[in-house]
Length: 639
Image 1 (cartoon, rainbow, N blue to C red):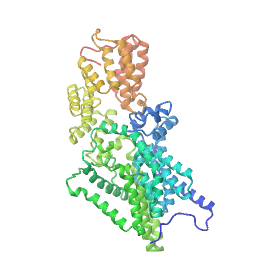
Image 2 (image 1 turned 180 degrees about the vertical axis):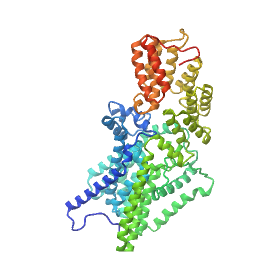
Image 3 (image 1 turned 30 degrees about the vertical axis):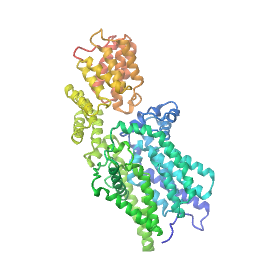
Image 4 (image 1 turned 90 degrees about the vertical axis):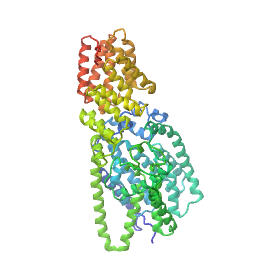
């Protein structure tokens, strides 16, 4: 068979004309990508966008220095990603459209870089491969989900590193080599999933020259050093995040080994036939004692062995190169190392964003080879077929983005396609609760408990709803069950304290709040609970207004939700409770001007929380403070 064909200028084409043609091709790719992803730019924040963006204190800090100098903060150490958020926050605040637009532009940039890399590797139809990558529905999860900015940036910088490294190999300019290593460092500091890039550099050397030489290995060593250093810095936070979520993978090494084989074929199927895409796929049950569990992995190894055996044939060599790149870039997501999402599923669409280009290139290359054998008569149908496929991909990509418009649409689609997705039921319950749809929220939390009876968070959330429905005994039972399942779970003790306080069981309430603080010293809500009792206790001998003010102010200053209220109803509820407590403490201390001004701010936040009963309570207390009267709880525990 003939060697791979590249998209280089024709022999009679002038350099200026070639540059102009490629510039138009690049612009066309960007325009098509922007048009295909128009729905994504109209989406809002979903799921953990609040953790990474709206509630991320690093993004709101006056200086980006803390982003780079605090590797052991409460979220992953991805300073390049957080810096991009920091810069955008200065431009358009917390309006989601700007962040979505940047995600789409970054995706288009990744497609352009993929095109240039494929040209360097002399891959056939490089432009078409990159265009299909830009339109592939599997990539919607990465592009339409703001949190996956880390995917986009790490892909962008890793492609830049690969392209620059390939140019260095062709031109032998030391500056290019240093730039390539720096690009890889930026990729690792965006997201560590691109750690296998040094292996891709070796595979590319084999593809281009037919062998891996000693110099190729030596050139990879600085990349390996960068990968190791970044991993050492990032690992403590990653371990904390994983352990905070309890066990994420119940199987031993053999179960993980078998599951890795399943995952590769799963991803391959979705790459070739992107249908029934789900945000949370059903979680497999893998029996490491069954030989059948290892068949997918064995088949994969057999394929690699056969391709290597026949690697002198150009088509076997091409398939082997593509499959090596694909599996190597998938390897961080195959379950050998714990990461948080394994709690919910062993696979996710965004994990093959780094790998899918290899499979697209392989498929398009195979089609071209078939058409060459058919002859010129097959050219026109090929153009028609390619246009039809691109239209189908665009239509499916457009439709898939609608799922990511908001939390409710995301979780409802997930449940419709995967009814056992307990995480989706729980999160939909949270969303319904923030909208004031309490009865529907109860149904979703109970759905979680039918699927996973030992789900502590769902018991806690159901208790919160029971408290809102004024069913305190049911609420207490739910909180106690949550603690029985997970004694270290943040929240249930604080919630118990709230219910005890409402019942007038003040000693038990304080004991619950203090127990919460012993286990979670930064719990601003537990501090708020103690401050409330000290400010409103019906027994004047038990009131300590000045101490209540100190505690309430501490709670307000250290409240992690204080900047997110405008975009997050749940955060607005927490901010309201804390400000209401501070206003009440001021009134108890006789500082009525401070009480009135603080209560007015609390009332504004209450309106953002979608909880009318909270709005009414704040308004009634505000009237008291304006009249120069403090609020005191009744003997029954009124609050």
